[in-house]
Length: 331
Image (cartoon, rainbow, N blue to C red; front, top):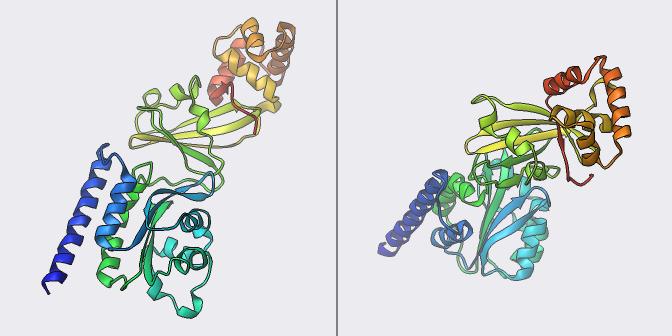
C-alpha cells in the first residue's frame, strides 16, 4: 500500500511539474529544453524503459524527435517517418486519448510501429498520445515498457496533461491556429523574428530579412485586433496575403491570386515599385531591365487601368495593397 501511495505521489508531482512548465511557456518563459522536460515527465508518470517526444513538421510531412531514451535508432526512425501512416494513427490523433498496446486486439497488432519498434524492442506494453493545439496537430509522445503494463491511472494523467504537453512540444507554445485547408500558412513573431511554417506550402521567407512585408504585416502597422490584406508579387508569383494577430504571433496565410485589370506580373512589379516611390531609373535598376522597357510597361499598365497618370496608378496600387518582394526563389 505504501509503495502504491509513493508511486501515485511521484506521478502527481511530475504532473504538477509539467503544468508549471507549461504555464511558464504561456508567460514567455519555460524550460530551456522542453523536450527533456517532457521526457522526464514521461519517465515519472509512466515509468517506461523507453520513451520519445516527437514534434510534427508540416513542411516535411514527418515527425522530429525532440528527446528520446531507450529506443533503438531504427525505432526512432520508424516513429519519425511512419507513425502518422500507422493504421491506428487516426484513432490516437482524432479521439484525443492515449492508446495502449494492451488495448489493441492481439490479432490486430501489426503495422509499422509494431514491426519496426514494438516487436524488435520486445516491449510488453506501451502508450502513445497525440498532442494538438486546437485543430492543429503538433506532435506525439510514446512510452514503452518491458515488464508490467500501463495502468488506468497513467492513462488518465496523460489525458489530463495533454494540453500542457502540447504547449511544451509546440514551437508556437500551444497557440490554437485555425488555418484554411487551401492556404499556405506560417506564424511570425515580430518581437524576435521567429517564423514557423504551419502548412507544407507555407513560405516564411516572405517576411525574411529586408522584406517590406515584415513592417507591413506587423500589428503596429494596422488597427488593433484587425487583420491585413495585401497583394504580393514575389518570386514570379502573385499571392493574396492575409495576416491576423494571435497572441505574440502574427498568422500569415497566402494563396495564388489572379492579376487585377489584366496586368502581367512584370507590370505588377513595376506598379508596386512606383507605389513605393521609385523612379523609372530606380525601377529599371531593381528589375535589371532598361529604362525604356520600364517606360513601355508604365504606358501599358496606365492603359489597362484606364488612368491618365502615375498618381492614378499609384492610388490603385495602394487600394489593392500591392507589394513587391524581391529575392525570393521561384516556386
